[in-house]
Image (tube, rainbow, N blue to C red; front, side, top):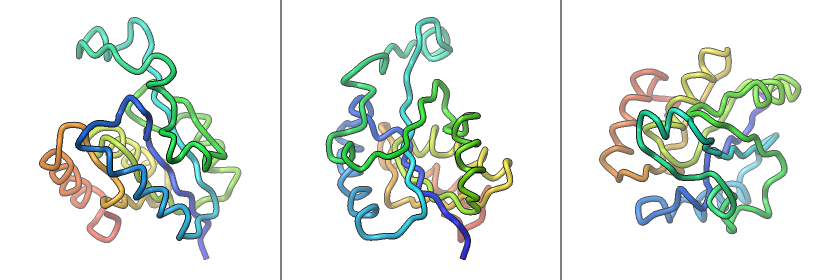
Length: 162
């Protein structure tokens, strides 16, 4: 059996709104009822002068409590990787994945149309099989953006991987 990892992308206080509030409990149930070889979380942390500030005008997620993993999941965190970009595929995460001999990366989390999508594509291009669990993802912008991102992921990764 292939080694796998559940990668929980950016389920942080600052990314919870009425469109995403249902996701933490769903992910908690997934973690408690499914066996993964490893579970890793990512945390987006914005920085002063970032692209997000200068080009998008987005001034959020710099500090606690916004950058913290949501309380419903915080007691399940064993490995956490800080990121400052859309992708979760940092050098640190890539090194961790190599050390665990992972073949398959199950991806869940917030911002299906940004961070989840970018992470899945980077995982694929790094030689791994990404599987996006769409029922465990959401987007701040709403269900239409989420569904559109899932359709794009199906095109790019193949239907069986979404």
